[in-house]
Amino acid sequence: MFFDVDPLEAVDALHGSPLEPAAEPRTNAPEDLPALGAQEYFASSLFAAGQGGSGEPCRQAPLATLDSGHEIRFTGERLGQDDLDVFLACLELAAAGTGTARFDANRMLRRLGRRVDTPGRHRLAASLWRLEAGQLELAQEQRRVRMRLFNTVLMDRLDGACLVDVHATVMHAFRKTTGLTALLHGRLSMKGSPLAQWLLGLTRVLPEDRLLAQDRLRALCGCPEETPARFAKRLRLSLHRLADTGHPSSIFIRPGGVLHVRRAIARDASGNSL
Image (tube, rainbow, N blue to C red; front, side, top):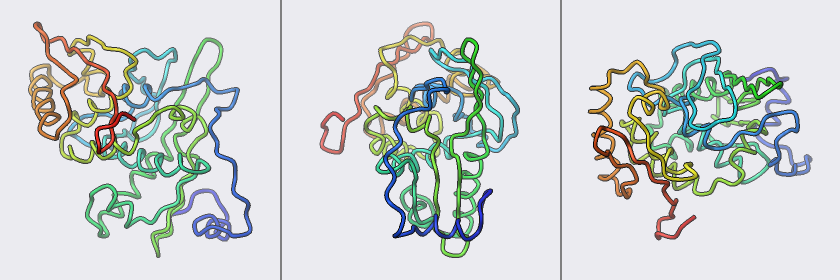
């Protein structure tokens, strides 16, 4: 699928042009945009941890955030943890170069641990479309700005070549975030447990230890309508899943159901901090 580009230009963009000089990496956010950090992406309801998946349409829905100095609203199809996996994989590729990720759809499916078949490619394309079409509206004092996560998404339906241009503000938000590859790997080991995946991201972006009531946590992870009893059960199962997949416990349930969340230090496969 192609979005708002000339077909010939799209082909050149997808497969690369040897005549084009390499662009400088984009790490600075435009001056007219409020600065966001990784916390607004991982410790918010932007990528919900519900069991119902993604795709539900919403318009200017307010996002629950931890400590953001912005009022943030989202318009588009509701994003889920599957979409966050695709987002992180694209960001991982874009961070290594110019803010643009180029990849083969089948290789991306393997990277995400998914079946390489037609339904898998359709699922990947649907996530890319949601990420490109979704719009964030940020308000801070007198400024209000609308932005997308991805500026452009191109996908060749014949050979599976893909190109994703990541918004400069997103690149800026993750410029100091280390361990994205380790985070993605850890998340993929928890497939089928969206709350465990969300909690792992939360521990990676906290600037300090925090105490969170479960009602607050339900809102933050995009599940405010889930009953407290059902959420508490899912939370306990998610904490066990974190432990079972080899991640040191960074979240403890204190008396009264309050969560003590410790900031985790990202480590590589050898145990070295990142």
